Image (cartoon, rainbow, N blue to C red; front, side, top):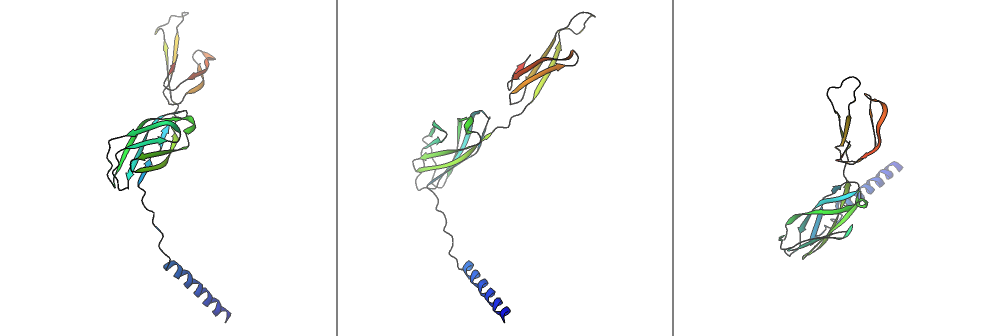
Length: 196
């Protein structure tokens, strides 16, 4: 008898849950904002630098957009104004904001972009990613003479070029052909430069 009552109670609980799921009111749908903006993430060197921000403005309002002013949360001095443009109702347009400055403190963080238009204002965030740095070196050794008589001297010139994107520090140069002592040490070579 108790088993039968337990089964009935379980069946009734199941039916109640099922009825709640079936007769639940539909979830409200979000209304489209008048203007929306999205922006792509950017990549800059660890110390900061300039980048191009690509921002897309979508016009969900009932007014044609004729001007957009972009501003950034990380730089109060930066703004970019686009006038005499047309973004029809229901359309979107992508803008390239070139030469946008980012500080070292921005790298690894999010920045808020605001698009202020004649049809409304919208904001979005994007990430400022650190550019991957590479370490790459080319090396040449040249002799002042190709033929050397016994007992005479020859001048060796070493050229080390940093062909990577990262500075290299504490470079130590040795040449087994002339001995085990360091020819140079503690040298710093910035990205793209050479040392002799």
